[in-house]
Every structure is written in C-alpha cells, then in structure tokens.
Image (cartoon, rainbow over all chains, first blue to last red; front, side, top):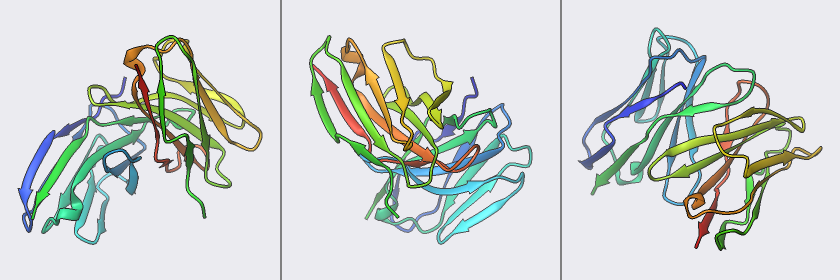
Length: 112
Length: 112
C-alpha cells in the first residue's frame, strides 16, 4: 500500500495569510496530482507534477514536487475565502492501470 | 467538452438491497475508475476499467462489482447493502494509462 500522509489535517486561517500543505510518502510516484474538493462535490484537479524538483505556479498557488518524487507541497499566498475546501494529493504509482493513491486530505478554512 | 457525469446524484437504500451507479466519462476517455469516500477512510480505490476490462481492483469485498461498456460508460453495483456502505461514490475518467484523472460530482449513497 502506497500511503500518502498530508499535514496539517485541519487548518483555519485569516484571509490574507499564507499557508503550506505537505504531502509525504515513503513511496516513489511517477506523478502527483493536487485536487480541491468542496462538500458534496467531486475533487477538481488543480495541477499535476511529474518531474522531481518541479515547481508549478497557478496564480496564488505554488506546487512543488520533491527531488525524490516521494513528497510534495502546496503553498497558498494571501489566502482568500474562496480557497476554502479539502485539499487532496494523489500519487500515480505507475502501475499497469490508473490507480491513484490519495492522501488523507487537508481541510482548509479561510475566515474573512 | 462535457465533464464526467454520474447518476443519480443522491440515493437512499435499505440494508440488504442492491444498487447500481452509473458514470459517463469525458468523451474520448477510455479509463474509468471508481472510488469510495467516507469521512473516516478518505478516498479509497474500488476498481478501474479500461476498454471494457477491469485492470485494477482495490481491497473491497465481492459485493462491490463493476463493468464498462463499449462506449466507455461504466456502472458499479453493490449488492446486499450494509450501513457502512453509506458514502460518496466518485467516478474518475482518464484518457489513457498514467494520465490525469477528472472526477464527476459523485453519487451520495445513504443506506438506512
């Protein structure tokens, strides 16, 4: 089992603050995806990182893939209430199929 | 381009009954995966189908089954429902192997 652990599990911050969410594993992934999910809805893909050390920016969100492709981080600058949601990382183990291993999730609340 | 469509969105069933959930992937996508999401366990992989063949299967009892049709649409079936089967069931579609997964809105199943 390729376990992905996210930290923190819960995060409540004021609007305008910065935050970082971590996704760690002892397994190597060929790619890693970040999703945001709102209550009662399916996860929405934010980004995919595939190269060790890769950094991708999506407006105020910065994603980094670890050099060894075992971990990743998501940094949000100047958080806004619209960033509220459950953030999930998912690793593609590179199996023969499309089985993604999901992290435990980080529930973010941004208070106006 | 239409996204992943899951039907129905909500379902209430009684213990012991069976249920069938449907998923229409994004046009052109051949891989369909199913996940169960619960507050305690997070997102857990059920199975994945590619070109009508089950390619991967998660650690779920035989009461959970699925199939994929020639048009890539997929169904999953749960027989002899238990209270613990109450969850959000999510379908994800991918174009091919090791490509990004896009999720539907899910089917909220409640077993009473």
